[in-house]
Image (tube, rainbow, N blue to C red; front, side, top):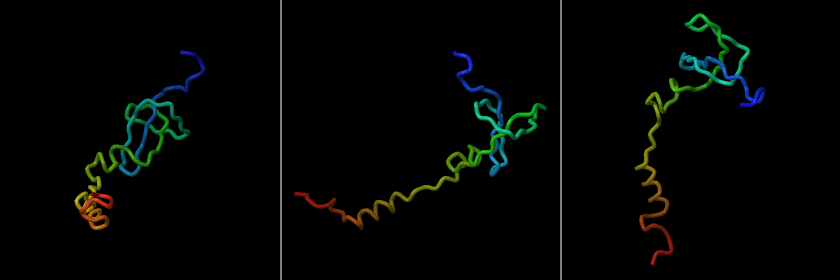
Length: 87
């Protein structure tokens, strides 16, 4: 690996403020803010808008599309025949 070409890879805390959840991982991202972690060390912290703790897909609050309603809407709009040009 070439020296001085790659960014430094260090421990960073990502914090999801909407869920009150934070996790420690390694990243090349940097921040001026720091947080004191459970192990007694201080790490840079990056606030994120959404994480696995607050994402609707992972929490089970995902919106399910009404596919049957979409088919009925399509048939009302274009008819049950399948369109024009059929022989």
